[in-house]
Length: 292
Image 1 (cartoon, rainbow, N blue to C red):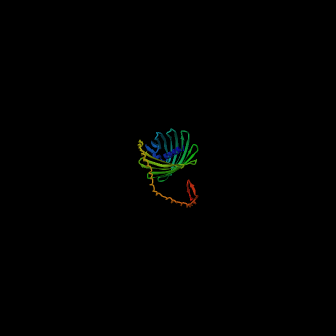
Image 2: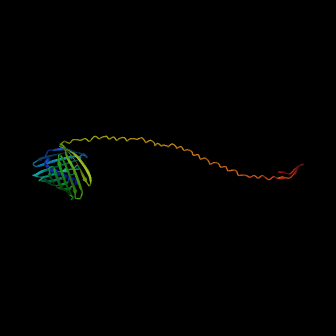
Image 3: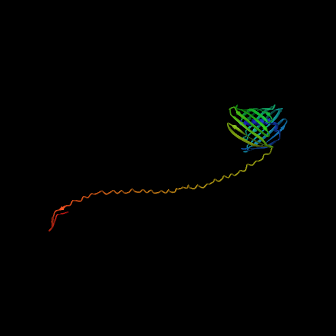
């Protein structure tokens, strides 16, 4: 809801401040964004100090949003506006407001009421600080009492406008945004920027082509991406086991110790004493005494 309120308030402010810039018959535009192409058209008719306008935008998924209304110049520097915006979901918002410009500053106030009965009010001002230099500030108050404050500054030179700003809520949250718009050629404007919410940065960028009939932009031809065939490497060769040549071992011959022949024990042979055999008869033969 807060985003819708801020967008609606910003749209009303730009329309009121630049009412004179919309005093032409109409045109078409294509906006190329990362989310898809948005095609739209708008027309305006002025007479008797009042300008009626109508416009619509078709998103990449076919949703249609429209906005119709009038802007009236009540006196020098005094304007009033009213209208109806209808979103792709069929919900509508009634808006009205007034703007007073003097001394390089335009102050505005307005109200918005949704088809669900919720309402919000806006107020603020835009000041021209110098050639191509602008500053703005204001508040948006929702029906539930929540208040959102916003401030921003814009600097334009050589076909490019740089902007930065802050939106803060009564609950303490803060959103910082910055970006630029550059006129590339006649009817072609590129935009880009960043939005920081709670430390997270979102980058945006668009190209808006204004003043030409809607042109169907075919989607880019899909490029066939051929994934490279994974390289098949042959298995590594088995590790070569190098067996070192056996070191020749010189056999060590240990000579056996010399055989020690123990000397034979000395044997003392004592000759037996001779045995004296006395003489005796052997048969009829007498054997005299002799040694045995």
